[in-house]
Amino acid sequence: MKRETADNKKAGSESEKKGSSGFMPIRNRRLFEGVVEQLTDSIVKGNHKPGDRLPTEKELGQTFGVGRPAIREALRVLENAGLVFVRPGAGGGAFVKDIGSGDLLSSFETIIRVNKLHIGQVFEALLVFEKVVLPLVFERIEAEDIRRLEACLSAAREAIENKTPEPRNLEFYMVLAEASRNPLLIVITGVLIDIVRKYLSRLRISFERKQQVLRVHEMVLTNIKAKKYDEAISIVERQFKEHAILLSKAGITEG
Image (cartoon, rainbow, N blue to C red; front, side, top):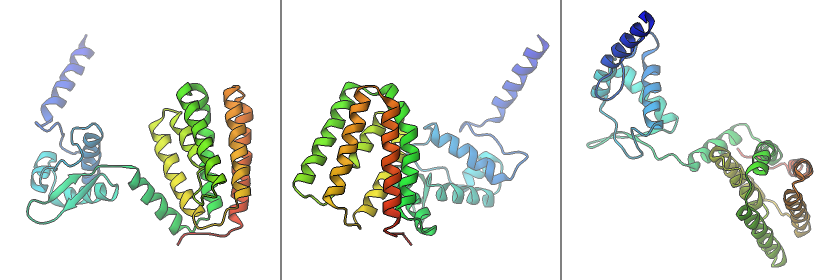
């Protein structure tokens, strides 16, 4: 009973420490890190939505009980993380950023350019995500997903017949990712596919090669329909490893 009372007192004490904003004074750590943590949590929870202007540096300093240098450092960290953007001048300040896949794409491309990665390595990364995605697809795939995959195959087949240079086979993997019903995997797979598409646009991929990829996708879908999941994963793995080897020999890097 005493413990329960003590817990209640602690909860009441913590509640009293919070201001009307819901934030708490920072204690016992590098000051700006505590500010970053609480502002990030507030943005993630939707308390501050895209486009919202955060309180001024002075107001944030008073709320958190820290000086302006700690607030400026925290805002710099949040800006580098892509959570806020700072607008100078009258009417300016720190605003919550509308975060989208474009930010992730830009970050991935920067990593690729700095490390001078080649397309084979990007394909290897995409394979890892496909191997994570596929088990979820097998659990969650619905009839509409099957129809969309069939439509992807038809579109790729038509593009090859019409000698359309743009690669259409990659869309098959995007639909597979969407069938996983996992938003994070969908976003990351989409970003990797966009990067691969940019690489491929700089290569001369033969239509014979595209036809071979299409046949592989047809086999994958056949095995998915038959619930032969091990076979489907094995086919995807072989294809991606082959792509990685062939495209690495092309020697295309960024940077």
